[in-house]
Amino acid sequence: MVVEIVVLGAGDAGKVLAAGFLFDSPPRPEPTRRLLAEADHQILIAYDGENPVGFVTGGETTHPDKGTERFLYELARGETHRCQGVGAALVSQLREVARSNKCYGMWFATEVANRAARATCERTGAVADVSESVVLSWRFGQEDAVPS
Image (cartoon, helix red, strand yellow):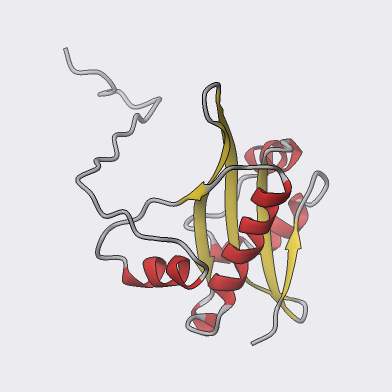
């Protein structure tokens, strides 16, 4: 399947909101505008004609001793466009954005059981590093944020 992938920028919040059905929850205008205004974070949307059929988001982080790397934050495809190469095309384009921004690498974390996400990334050249890593997270604004 041939899709057009568009790297969004400042002023493209309407495109994200129009693709809201692809996200876990409807995108909120202010966080959308903020992300699009940041040069080191991107949203790429795949279009089949005029219709958004997938997206990928990613950001960069810089380490004083390593340089800058890209992380793939979220990847989604519409139900009707799964297993058609849309996800791999989005990941490949995000990888090219990372290369053009002089990143030394790109990474993505997912559950071991998420075979679809793993296969999509592996098709684009990613190598699985299945280890005993643990993802720890903080959620701000919750009443039980810090146990005593």
